Image (cartoon, rainbow, N blue to C red):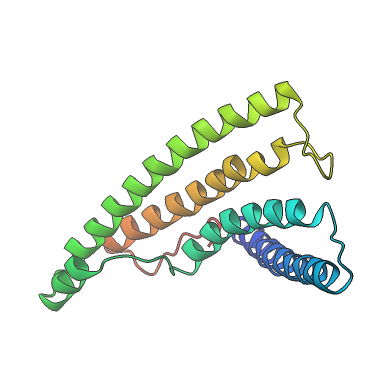
Length: 173
């Protein structure tokens, strides 16, 4: 059941990334054409592109974590692997994931605080008259998703560390 939910979420996340990128490209391209050919621009295009980019970036963190594509310095993990210290490498991976999880929890906490203040203030964007909190929601929502992925990764590393690599725990991976 959890694996099925994870697959559905991964599909939704992938589609949201593709669609938001496509919309951003079309809107920005249209605005460039409007500005330089017709000497008139769309008042809402930059605002929409900005909000789509914010959501795209935060969802991209989650997608990058799922595919293990984030930048990292692997000097220590490569040195441990060369010496055959697989368990030490797993411990290092757990420590890194725990630090990342703590950072994500802090970002989520303050993201929710800012989100709640924006909801209370009922601030809207100047061009589209859209509630500002929709942009801030990306920080809180995607931090929770990244946290879930990190917990799943930590559990997976713990399983490998204690000799159960055949049991694969995937919450949203």
